[in-house]
Length: 233
Image (cartoon, rainbow, N blue to C red; front, top):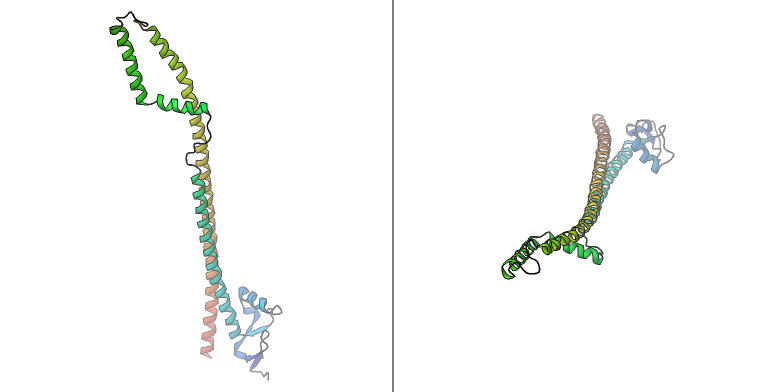
């Protein structure tokens, strides 16, 4: 039976001592929201017991810890996924042979051979043998006597043909370099954007944690004050 020393809780409809009576006006908003989630009719004008309020305080702290663990797990998953994407993007920067025409293959081989010491040594030996053969073996009366007009013609034709072939190969290499530069730019841009997003996530997480920790500290202080009040009484 309800007397002056007891009251009826508006959420459980149970009878409690008057010293445990707590008004809805004194309950913090996050905890009040939890109470109203279970009891929509509860408002600031109603009352509940300290023991019931402590249950919702513990529930609030428990929910906070669960949410934080979930957020950290999600952040870890996103970082791992981002790293995997980075690997797949970097792999595309590796040199690719691609489809080449017959002319491009010939141009690449000519440029590779023409720009090597092997070509210089072999061509130098050829010129020396040509000169010695015409001077000493044919006694300068052969098919190309001094001043070696035929040899100069061969060298001029070789230079005239070799130069554009090497330029074709260089143009292809420049295209590959431009494509590689574009891919490098894409990687650098992606890395910069991900670093910015990571900083924003960390800043948001830190601010969110600070606000929630302050709220939890206030709830804990209230619980301690309630305990001290009950002890003193």
